Image (cartoon, rainbow, N blue to C red):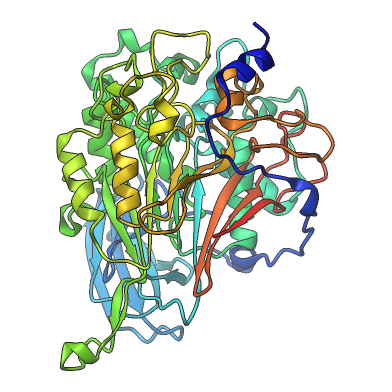
Length: 571
C-alpha cells in the first residue's frame, strides 16, 4: 500500500502545528560576540588551562540559593586552589576559601545566594611550586530573578550523537593525535577554536576532520551560544556522550563483549570527563543540566549503569535529595525565579510572592525492560511516578516537564520496518493517539501522565530523541489553556531522511518539505539546531535556531544561516 493511501485510510488523528517558514526571514543579525569577546581579550588558555585541569570548572545551582562548583585537577597534579565569589560586579569579596594539595575532584558549595547574579574567579597553582594563576572573572545568572525585572532564557539541546563520529568503515581516522582527541572529547574544542577564529569555517571535504562532523556541529552550537545568547541555564535532553557501546571499537576501545568490569569503569570515567571537556567553554558561567537518554549508559538493563551513574555524580553533579529529587540525581526539579521578595517582612501576608518557573526533569530510561515491545511497557517506575505526582502540585507561574522521549510512542523501532519493539518515537501524548493500537489506551502510562500534567497546569513538555524540531498542541481541558509538546531538535550533522519517509512518521509529524531545498512549508525541521525558551511577563516564546552549517544533509533551507531563527511560537 502506498504511503498516502495508508494515511488516508487510518486518518491523521492528531493536532499538529504546521511550521511555515514563509513568514520568517533569515535574521542575519550582527553577532554580539558576548563571551567570545571576553576570551579574545584574555590571556587565559581557551577553554581551560590543560596543564593544571582536565576540563573547565562547572557551576550548577542545586536549589534557588545554593550553587556547587566542581573542579577537576589534571590527573597526576596536586593543586592549591583559592575561590573568590561576590554578588557585585566589582568583585567585592563576600566569600573566599583556599584548598591545599587538591589531587581529586573538588566540589565546593556556595550557599546563601539571594542576588540575581553571582561573580567568581579561581586562583590556582601547583602545590608547593610556582606562582598563583587566575581564571577570568565568571558571571553567572542565578535563580533569584523576578520576571518584572528581566526575562528568563533557557536553551534546550539534545542528541548530539558525537560517538557516531567513530563509525567503523565510514569515519576511520589515521591521525594518532586526532584519534586521542576524539576519544577524550577534546576534538570539540579543536573545532571551537577554529570557529572562533573563522565563523565560516567548515572542515574540508575528504579531510580527517570531515569525518568528525557531529563534533563539529556541537562546537558550532557552542560557539553560537557564546556569541549570541546569554541563557540562565541549558538543559541537555540526552544522547550525548555516555553510552553508545556499539561505537566503542570505533573509538579504539575493546568491543563491549570483551570488556572486563575494571575496563568498563575506566571507559565510563573517560566518557564522563569527556562530557566536561566538550562543554568546557560553557560550564564555568552557564549551569548545564541533563535529562538522560537511551544512549547515555544509565538505562536499567545496561551493564554500564553503575559506573556511568557514579562518574556522572562525580563530574556532573545535578540536584538531588536536598530538593526532593532522586538520590541518583537522575530525576529532579529546577526552580528558577522561585523566591519571595522582601522575605523578611512580617507578617507573611504582606510579602509579594514570585513563584517563577518550575522545570521537572524525568528519567524515562532506568525503569524499563531492555527493549519494550509495546508502548504500554514504558514506565517511569513506581517511585519516580509517585514523586512526579507530588512535584506537579508545587505552585509556579509556569511549569515545564523535560524528558528524552514519550513514555510510549508508536509500536515500531527506529526503523519502522522493525516491529518487535516500541522505541518511544513520536509526539504521542493523548488517549486518542493510542486508540489505533489499543482498545483501552489507558494501558499506556503516558496517557495517564498527560492527564495528570493537564490537571496541574503544565505548559510545555520538552523532549528529544527524534532529532527534529516540532511543536504540537496537546490540549488542556482542565485549565482552559493548551499544553504543548515540543521536540527540541538536534545539534547533529545529518537529518534522518529514512525516518521522515515512514508511515507513522508522516502520520504524527507530517511532511518534511524538501531535504535541502528551497524555503517552503514543512511540518518539522531537522538538524542542526537548538531550542530557546524565553519567559517574560507577557508569556512564553519558543524558537528553533539553526546552529551549524550542515548542507546538504537537512531539510532546513539553505538561506537560513547559523544563528537564524527558523521557527517561532508564542504561547
